[in-house]
Image (cartoon, rainbow, N blue to C red):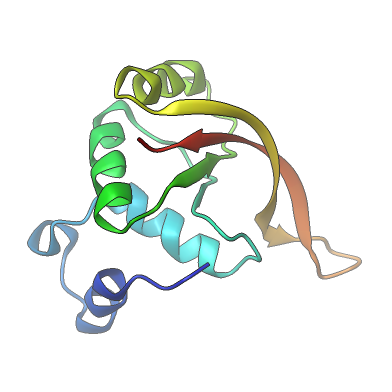
Length: 119
């Protein structure tokens, strides 16, 4: 995954998310994805309803065309619906690398994720 300059600057300067206008859920998904072989941001943790519009805004700001959500949280269907309601397209299931590694192989585990196209 390519690095995002604004997020890297915020990390280096240790500013708070609000000062930088950065959604924390987006930021942590970005940071965790950097540790994997994924080419796009994967939301392996819970995405809250309040995050959806900001995530879409950041994707547009940083020219991100697709994201994945691999979190198995119980409100996932509602969140996917919110992405669709905001003009995004649910493309289907895609295999992604988890941030966690397999004990025996020390390789990132491959997991299922829902791929979302940002419009």
